[in-house]
Amino acid sequence: MTRTFLALLHFDGRGFVGWQRQAAGRSVQGDVEAALARLAGALVPAHAAGRTDAGVHAAGLGVSFTLPARWSAPALHRALNAVLPADCWIAAVHEMADGFHARRSALFRRYRYVIGTDAAAASPFRRPFEWAVCRTLDAVKLQKAAEEITGTHDFQAFAARGQVKPHYRCRIAVAEWRERPGGAGVVLQIQADRFLHHMVRMLVGTMVDVALDRRDPGDMARLLASTDNQATSPPAPAHGLYFVKAGYPPSAFAVPIEETHGALHDA
Image 1 (cartoon, rainbow, N blue to C red):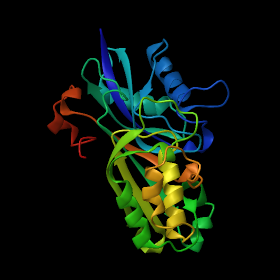
Image 2 (cartoon, rainbow, N blue to C red):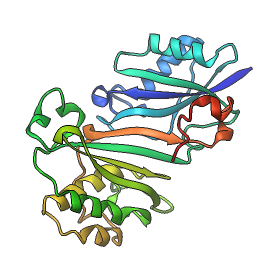
Image 3 (cartoon, one colour):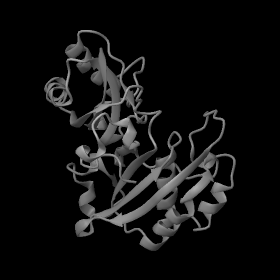
Image 4 (cartoon, rainbow, N blue to C red):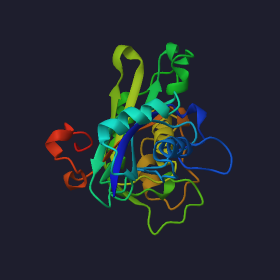
């Protein structure tokens, strides 16, 4: 007998080549699977709600896996945090319904992108975790650019080259820039049913260029009508990006939804 679990993973992306195992370099998936192998005594595949690139952080990446039924969610939560490296941490573990898969079962994904606009953004205590633009951004232009991308669009112009997909449509439910406390900068909250490779970073890079008057505000709409990324701004740095959350239907949880304190369900 086995049980399926969902772990909510936080990690500092600086030491990783990304989530996915690769031929060379340390991956988050490799470290998680090594921790699970220590607990189970055998190889345990781990599946994430989304892939992250090198340097991208997570503050709630859903990771699913199956373990022997002797494990409970509370015991697994304690055990994983005891064996994972210091730059990884599990915020919670939930027992899930049979057949659950962190990626395939997800209804939406949510990211945030953090930008520092003040001089202190260049501090070594902040620079690794945000984009230190250190310049004032036009808040009105930023938000208007975000409004342009809300809804269902073809995002081929904001995807890395070389992706061959049946389609490039994504439905963005939320795209909102918010001011950070103390004039430290701005944060983008963005949620969609799916994201293409480099999509959030390319959107941010282009929106920042609009807010710095390096691009015309109408460029967002023109790029959404494009079939390539040749005119898109370079992607924003990876270290400002955080995978925050994936949403799942209540039926995916083995424990009734009211006992999960609303984790992951709000849209």
